[in-house]
Image (cartoon, rainbow, N blue to C red; front, side, top):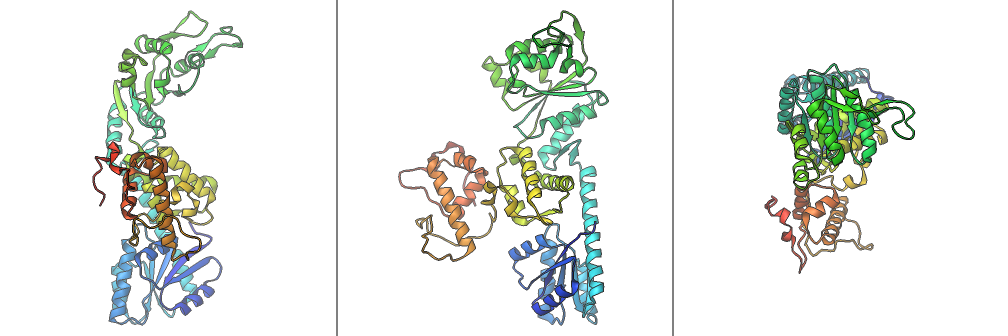
Length: 491
């Protein structure tokens, strides 16, 4: 659990002491000093830090209260690092107050460097162990996991409870939801918790395959059934006997095969290609789709009798944008798993990164989130995932909630190359404004379509429009997008 390089933040106005401590600590430690108490700078520093050393030496009544308020601010941050307090040995009342407010330990002034190194290491180890224990308890005992699925949002908790109830009942299940939401994981959870959990779980996707190939995959063939059939082959239905057959993208199954598969559900029997011999099977069928099968039934593209055979119980997996409470939980889970897989040091996300993850629209759902986190871990060099490791499309949505200075709506979207850069925040504001205005123009000021093109949530785009004071242009109408009418004003 020890780290090769422990990152320590020294919160003090005495920069000279900070430099001296940094030199004395030597190899294995990186130390930053910061005398600012601004919350935004504090958040950035805490995201970088493994341990914090707070300087409360020579405190009078006023500076003592400032230091204690800073300690409160640190403790108010989620998953904050341990805090050690540097104070005068004789000031026992201040020492007790800091411990009462959540300080991990104290260091007497002047600090003994050997003792300081040991205290830093011990504080980090204890906090890391406690955090890991809380994480494991939450996963195992907090109702956040169903086999391979994670989720703490109300929608997922309701889904988990329903899946637990129907799993022991040997009925067919239809799982609906967008691509990447984890439909196969839910199917495997139902299989393992059901009566057939010790039997085989056979999965097959019907998507974008020729009907003849799907038929061969499902039902198998006899030797000589067609050119190239040199041996007999067992199909997926037969392989799933006494177990569960999971059919993904069932909506892509051709009408001809729908009739043949209906017989499997009704008669529990079928024939291989090129054979007249009937094979009896005992399978539970769990199917999944991202399409509206009822609409397909009305259009004559899906058999009604097959639909009702498959849909004894329907479970719907919500899109990730509909359960944003789960994004942080999933992201940390993927971070831990990817760091172990690729032997990387990444252990946490910087605050702007988590903000970007939570505000992104996630059209690819959980699968896309996993890929983004995996990419960030591979590109990371330290213990913290930074904005630079995110895909380009996500970097522009960091610092969402930071206050922005007022700017006239008729201000130029693009900066004149001769105009001096006033600040980093102004340049970011100009870039965001230019990008959003250009996209809105391209899509006729329809905000729902513009949000999809930008890859952000529609509500987030509304907030940006108000923050950046973007007005509709003369002759255009922002309100003509019917999808936006139900959103209401953005506060």
